Image 1 (cartoon, rainbow, N blue to C red):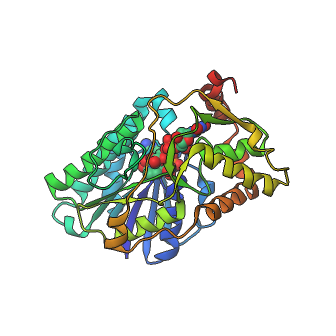
Image 2 (tube, helix red, strand yellow):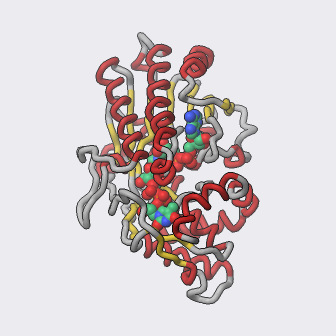
Image 3 (cartoon, rainbow, N blue to C red):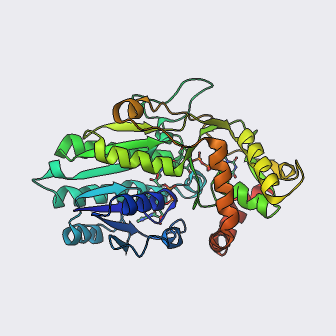
Length: 352
Ligand code: NAD
Ligand code: DAU
């Protein structure tokens, strides 16, 4: 029996990780710790929330006293840490929130783990889920490897880079068993519609303009979220302490090409004539400090631990569109209320 504390399990990626662990490891006890910010949604887990090996705890990882008490009470064997503020645009308008959750929150968890596991670090693991954005940006060529120097540009990526450094420092200084993975852009079900793909699906569905930053030339390397969850599972169970793994889909797309593909898929699914959805594409003011290109070399993970992505992008995107069209209630739920204020503020200067 293993007790695993998963933070941020009500979010996009966290909910897929929680579901995978509940289903694949019935002998594990899974505790989902989540503050339920705007991005956290227990509806993401309705199919598994009644499982006997699952418990949800609402709480804030920046609340040091609460986190220490939680560790003393639950004595988890391991942590998989996903809780974070995750949206680059929000980090530009409100950086402090990102420092609090991503830096202070991570250190608060590391401290609690260090105290709780003292004298027995070898039998406990702290897995920190991070991003490829810590490496900064690539030009037209090249790939991020685990040896690429950190060079973050946005407050979001700077806060994630800082948290990665703290995790490594707790390994090097105190001997905590830590592993880190840095993943590229995820897509799939339960993705909050502030991010490019779900935002575009929602806008196309509602016949609203689809905002493309700058010239749409920026490149991202897209990975199906369930493949990220399978990589996390592999790394959690097999990685050597102190190691870092890059996770990516070998699947680079210019934003504008991706949006055109999505528009074609949506035309077919919605019975629209060819080109109808693409007519909604609207070029808007670029994101400040916008990284040009991300692309991951995941050779280390593939060669050492045998992980490979399972799904081709066109198939994954089609499945993702199906999910959003079948789950209109989920979309309506998360795009009501505060979302409207966020959307107005984020896109008002573009007069969308
Ligand atoms: P998300 O924004 O969808 O979910 C974040 C979750 O963390 C939410 O459930 C939220 O309620 C919770 N949370 C936020 N602040 C909290 C706090 N103070 N205390 C407790 N819970 C809190 O994020 P996501 O896209 O699922 O990303 C999860 C992790 O994976 C993040 O660490 C992110 O940096 C990393 N990551 C994301 C991607 C991606 O493409 N989305 C890619 C690589 C890495
Ligand atoms: O690379 C991993 C990262 O991917 C994660 O660490 C982040 O948590 C996650 O949010 C994601 O960051 P991006 O900034 O790459 O994702 P986003 O969906 O916000 O934007 C993808 C690209 O699309 C980026 O080049 C900006 C552009 N974009 C985004 C939005 C929201 C637009 O052109 N228009 C938009 O309206």
